Amino acid sequence: MEHVGWLHKVHGYRAMFQVNGKPRVFSYGAWEVTVHLFLYARTARSAPAYQEFWIEAPEELPARLLAWGAGKGSVDSALGGGSFLPPRAAVDPAPGSS
Image (spheres, rainbow, N blue to C red):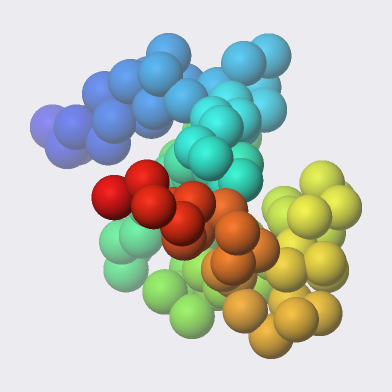
């Protein structure tokens, strides 16, 4: 019998973090946050409907995330400054508010 526990992870991820097959965008202050699921196993094979979640090597993660972000148009601007930090004003509290 094949272990299919990963299917529960994919179905839960889709229910919580996707809308119409795309990552749901959560706002947190100046940030737009998305959650992505990637699965890895040395001998992984899956049905075509789940292929988007499987990677062949952990080293693929950065390229897969950057490819998603570039398609959204957000990663280029974040990388342009050499940092993923939001503008300073979005991080620091207003003077006298502490």
